Length: 111
Image (cartoon, rainbow, N blue to C red; front, side, top):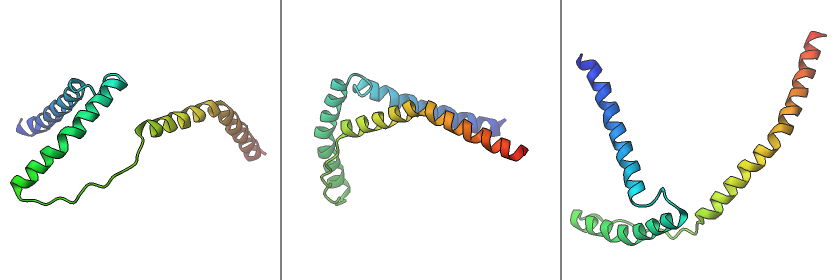
């Protein structure tokens, strides 16, 4: 009985953590509109560095400075959407080509 309780407890703990993460993301506006997400990102960028600095000072750690990264999330997202849509639009043509090649291969095997 105890052996079955352990996996069930693990599942409940993992499910609880996942649910809590989704709730916090929703509560902070990360799952809302783009405007709400941008506002949540701005708040996180303002809040996290001082909090991390406070903890490192408290623990006596010295962290390296964070590198500046020029990364546009919206441009990356748009490129990903464009790539997926172009692949989906080419899928019927590719499926026909592969079907023809498959039939040729089967005919050659039968000969």
